[in-house]
Image (cartoon, rainbow, N blue to C red; front, side, top):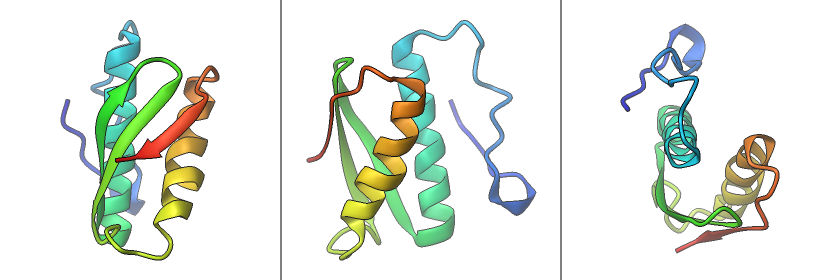
Length: 94
């Protein structure tokens, strides 16, 4: 799924199917987070793996060696994903 940002930087989610699987939902959610982080901060968030309890992502771009990357990982990524996947136990950067 490809996403674009609307005016004001809000992601356009009209392409996310209502009946999406968990795999499709997590992919779409990480893609939305990636679009936001890239647009506003020059960073990247890439889904590596999700088993229902542990989410593994790769932070890139401006997030590499950034002293605030832990805030991005646990504040933005983990905080957002937990809203949609309450069973999430761990988020790791790999």
